[in-house]
Length: 432
Image 1 (spheres, helix red, strand yellow):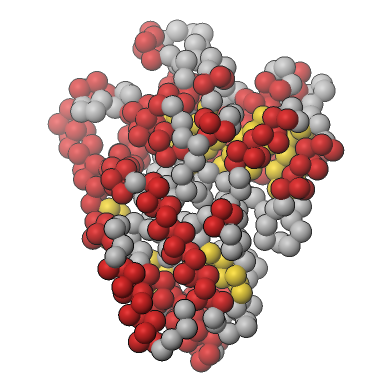
Image 2 (spheres, one colour):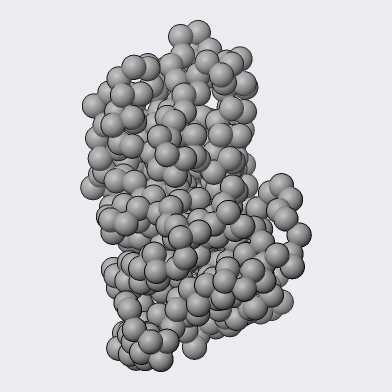
């Protein structure tokens, strides 16, 4: 990676020129050097067009859009589920687009915890535990603790968190030890740790959970659309995710979930009319009959306007191909890691170097990460900050190139060496 600035720039441009996905950038409205796609992906022409079509259907058909729109709105969640399913390695009817990530955690986690304990009432009599880790995104723990409290259980007794040895990653050996030491009903882990970018081996964790009598569930929010998954082959019991990060479906876009087909027919812990079997849903029966697929976990009416951009966004992802996306993602993050390692010693990389353990972003660590992130933003380099010391950089493959990554590294070096970040206020609490 060494060489003069001109040589490094020429190398990056040559990599972009030979990139088979380079043309997709022109299909996105990308603000500046955009490295924040793990928080919100930018708008694509396809997502914009799909939303526009639904707006026109609403204008022209009104209520008849539920049955007469093309595609009809009544089956919108299931139809989009079939488009997401190949990205997570699932059968078409194992995936449905619905709710939000947190709501889907509530219903799926509660359902499988109750199954493990013979029902909600039984779970309060002789319950086991739910296994998480102490580096999780907070909403996962909020939801789990709430569900335990609803069952009269003390979360401090029934929620076990595997501790990190280094504050960045979770060791598989520690997960295995926790499963053996505790009566675990459900293991619920992310696919990628949101700060460090550590990618877990979903299949291996699922096997560990099952070998110890626990269900295995995952939060794929920081991997779906940039890392291919094989949930069905791995035997994963359930999973949740959002679509507004690497899948670029827009702010607050409707989320998605997976339920393994062997659990079809299970009555969800949280039920609503949109999860009723489709054939009799409008008979308005007082008794809930769950759909015989993942659609049973829908609660309320599908938010069509929040789902429509995903329809177009998925077309772009499928055209690019998830395997090619992953290949480029690894190349971009590998390049970024090498560039950061050449920066002054004040910088370090908090993300695993091994490709198989790395998701789609890199945690660039620096004692002034907060002020660096603010300074970068003012230079149209859009990143985000994660406490205590991480500039999180996500070079999303569909609209980011190697020269963009070089621009980030050069900006970091310049801000550090000139101490230009000192013009910014020290960090307040929270993230950016």
